Image 1 (cartoon, one colour):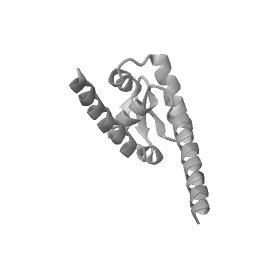
Image 2 (cartoon, rainbow, N blue to C red; image 1 turned 90 degrees about the horizontal axis):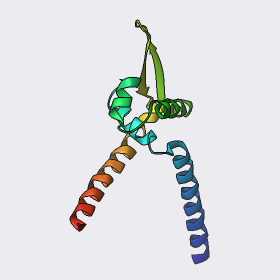
Image 3 (tube, helix red, strand yellow; image 1 turned 30 degrees about the vertical axis):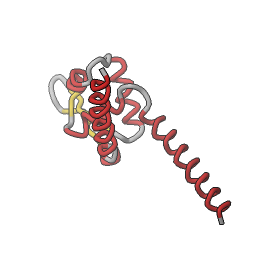
Image 4 (cartoon, helix red, strand yellow; image 1 turned 60 degrees about the vertical axis):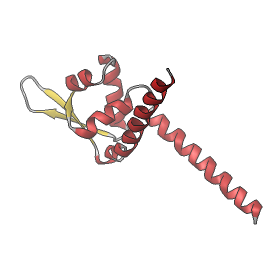
Length: 119
């Protein structure tokens, strides 16, 4: 019985690790989670995202937005304005990451407090 439980635990562990790798491949890099977190709260134009996500370059933002769109996490919407402007919004599928961004943010807040406490 114990051997079966260990084998089952190993399968579960390897499946979780594979799933984590898949997730990290989609969300890799310094900026994607921040962009997703912003768009979870409201649709934004390119320039608004560029302002909100401190430190990202325009070229990098364009690349990350394309990647997020390819992975069905956001929608790009061309607005009928003069001049033409583009808005980005979180997809229903992308919205499933909101809880993850909240957990990451909470952990980051607690980690910062822990590190400040050390000094």
